[in-house]
Image (cartoon, rainbow over all chains, first blue to last red):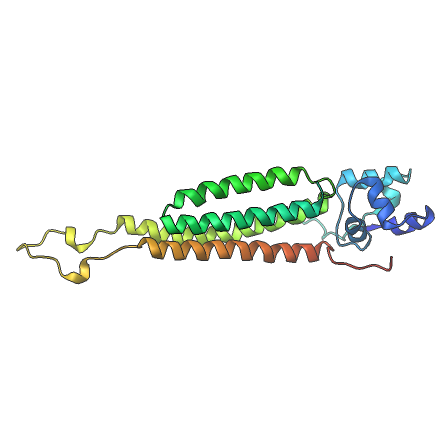
Length: 72
Length: 154
């Protein structure tokens, strides 16, 4: 899972602390999400997306892993 | 209440508990420390709910949950192993109870003292320490995994 939170923060001229306060989490959580160390819950993902007034898919990008072909 | 006030009160509670433990040992009444411990934990939980500047978000809750689950997964195996050993003693019939023909007094070596209270105390202490070390270890591991001490350019 990749995300563009850093890009959107830059676009809105926000620090991690500002964003964290706005959505009610710690700065470490925003940092961990940006660095891909923590995957947020659906609730938090939606809150972040709503804050930037975009759809979730525009901020969070799901990298689908190649699956083995079905047998038979 | 501020976070620092909570930590200060928690420290005071721990000191009071230590005093009660000492007294409990002096008068040899384990019930005092047992009741005091339950009350102290309840007080700490209540105080924690009164802290205003403690932000607990889903990531910190996840770290706590993961650490607790992993601690439980390891601890219950060790605890069960000790307990099975103790339960086994319930089923063990010492030689003194087996009928002897012709009747003879049992030798001294068969008069076993099975799991004396002091040994049980040491085992409980070891288990308690194990639980604390496991929890702290797992907490550090998951905090690192979920970026607790990550630094950024900001």
